[in-house]
Length: 95
Image 1 (cartoon, rainbow, N blue to C red):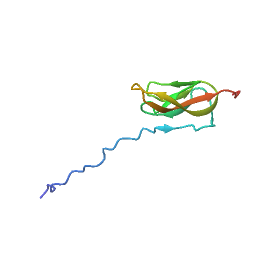
Image 2 (tube, rainbow, N blue to C red; image 1 turned 60 degrees about the vertical axis):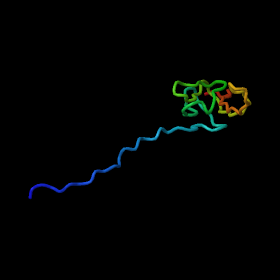
Image 3 (tube, rainbow, N blue to C red; image 1 turned 180 degrees about the horizontal axis):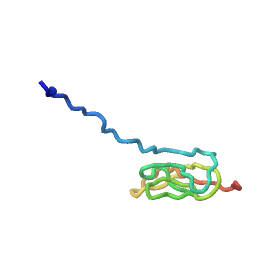
Image 4 (spheres, rainbow, N blue to C red; image 1 turned 90 degrees about the horizontal axis):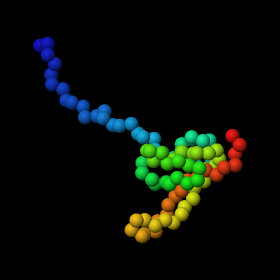
C-alpha cells in the first residue's frame, strides 16, 4: 500500500493584494513638490491649483505648500448641479 488516498482541493489562496487607495494628506498638512495627496480610481476628487492629475487619477502636489480641500457646485453633462471636491496646494512655505 504505497499510494495515498484522494485528498480534497483547497479553494483558498487567490485573494489579490489591496491597492492602498485613499487620502494620503489631509487639509492643513504641508507637502513638497511630487508628494502624493490622493490615490484614487476615477475622479472622485478633482485637481485644483498647484496639483496634477496623473494617468492613474492620483493627485500629486506640484508646489510646496499646504493642502486645501474646497467644495464647488458644477453642472454635469445633463445639466444637473453637483458638488465637486477640489484639492489644491496653497503656497507660502520656503522648503
